[in-house]
Image (cartoon, rainbow, N blue to C red; front, side, top):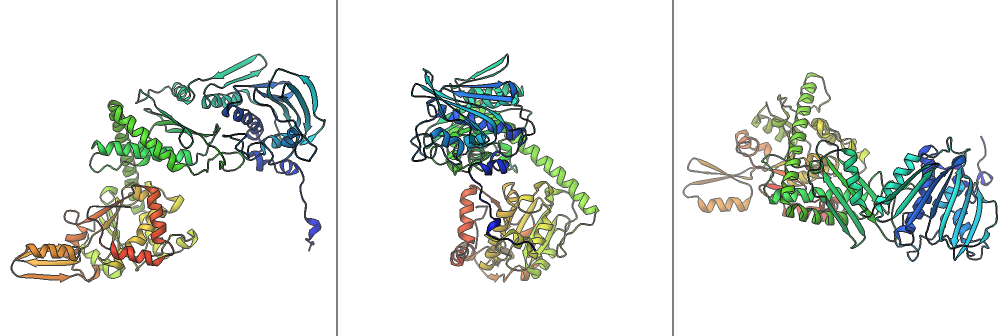
Length: 629
């Protein structure tokens, strides 16, 4: 066996880590990684523009696969850094995590935040020449593979200002070191759109393009409309710009006959994987449109508007400029992690609601469009589910042994009752409609899934049975199109223990089958606690308060019976009060605010059991029409 000791430990120095593992810093060494080198230098120029020090950027594709990037900003400092004896320019290009963007006094807003961009380019360049036009003097220094190959030179007086970086990528690292003109042009065009008034020029041989958009993303979304060749439903663009907590710009068109597209940017960097700003835009749009529909009573009966319906065929742009410490995911900055979801959501919701209410004709068009999308989604899902149910009933599938399934293949009329214990299961089977109603008994209180590892949840038998019966999977693998029942109904005893089981089930569905709730398929049954007979007429009461209210109205001989639980309730009573669609009382569960609901479940189902018990004791009997969580 080979020995492993201190002499086996290697410490990489300088820029050696970048050359050894370039993918950690630029994503890959293919074409995307090669172009990322250019993006890093261009983003430095754009940061100068964002902070008001630069109005022109020029990019040139030169012979022998060189690229040259120039701005007219402040120029890289060339004075001596600390006691190192090196200039600031040399430190920036040869040292990881060195730069002027860790201090807000230099850059209020910046896309380059890690201090590794310039040094990574230097490390992966066969040749790099950096020129700084600073303090009326022209300075130049050459590097190769992360190491200076010349001292900094004073090239005399100049009237220019700014920085020029000319480099050629290392062919020993990149299989192909030729830059693509179209790819770089698209990148530069987007930067010009996001920074209103900035002029960006690209040259390659005889070809020259200039990008300059005084209206910023207003121009950008109109350009996208032209490319898609689709007519917008809202002929007046929804656009706003706000500089309160941070600079936020958003523009939205709803189109007809195309896929939804959202383009998100943070500090002029395209966040292709979205992030908190994009999430805020989506939730803000959903809440604004829903609010508009509800306030104008436009939603048809039995139609539930999902978030995706509000964004159907939507073309949107959201751009934020954040100050100070900005959290991106990784050096390639594909996703924004800074916690601004709620701030973006609130502003978008407010502005969009105002826009819809002041543009009634447009509001009606968008409302009709969203409702049509919801109907199409529901019809498609029901058709798919119907086919799936037929397929499942014709095949041998892995359904839980305790499930007493219904025989209907029609998704919209089928119901699954999840009831408490075998005794209740027996009563429910006698009271049900076998054609449309399925019964799944579970043993007492299921696992509290709040804060529990998914592996433990997956291994829980009761949760396995519920998941198998519903048929959609769990967590990230949940597929609403595979739902086997139009309604999933939690049916527990009308007491504190029953309420506790309901809350445990609600927690599971909220955390691991969220779309089931969002699409309006989850319900809670409201079995009565009392039966009251008076003059050959039977009444039912859900709790003591309702019973006392009834008793005050009744006269003559009154018989009052208390149900000990679903298992001991006569099947005819259970059918009339809890299972027959014509006479039963059930709640639809809906989510008004995901973030508030998330906080509620954390508090209620967390480690403090006393808070949970107090809540359950107080709320053992729920509201009578709808449960909003």
